[in-house]
Amino acid sequence: MAKFTFYDYIRSRLDRFLLRRPRSEFEIRHYLRGKLIRKNIVDKDKQEAIIADLVKEVQDLGSIDDEKFAQWWVDERTYFKPRGKKALQFELYRKGIPKDIIDETITAANIDEKALILQLIAKKHFTDFNQKVIQFLLRKGFSYQNIKKAIEEWEKKR
Image (cartoon, rainbow, N blue to C red; front, top):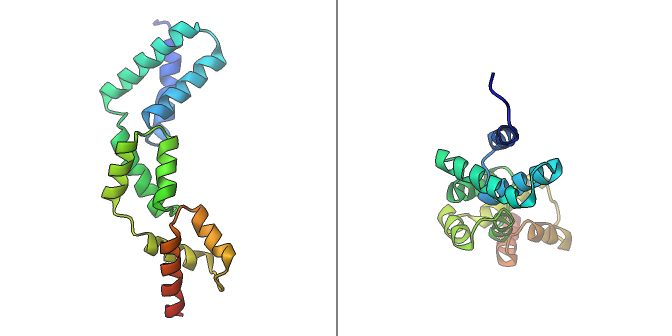
């Protein structure tokens, strides 16, 4: 019977981590670093080597692609939790995606912020548009100009 090694254990945990949703390379490295530190079995010198081996192994399988991840993230956020371009840029930056990929992905997505704002306004059933509504939309990453245009359009429809 084959012996189940620590490397196999970490690899199986990584597989489970990757099954939930697509991940960026930064997220995978962060996850592995956390697992190795918590288990505290391997020396710190060997930790980076193990992480590099596992990341290379997963990259060879095609499970890590920051461009595909960024596209998936923008699509999911636009559909399920509408966010403005600024918020999407910040989220992708926090996921460890390089700035050039972020800019390329957001430009290619062709996000209509005004339509997303109108969708949020309809969903939240705002009746009067005071500073509180504008602040809510600003926190979602929408630009002030687009918020004003969307509110004007919404009030014309009513």
